[in-house]
Length: 64
Image (tube, rainbow, N blue to C red; front, side, top):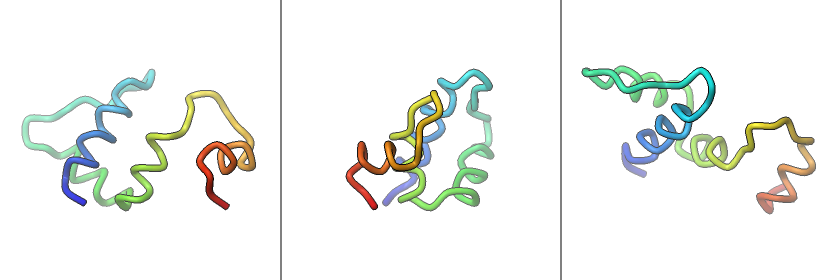
């Protein structure tokens, strides 16, 4: 996967109350790459803002 996944994750996170704005030098993308694998990033973007039971998340996403 390309850097696009991290750009999309940054955009997703920026919609949250705390935000996650861009920086002129791309530092936010480098931080996301250290914290999330591409698969983790995809899953994070599928979560809802309200708390959910793990079983409900798994059922909704079709995973174990």
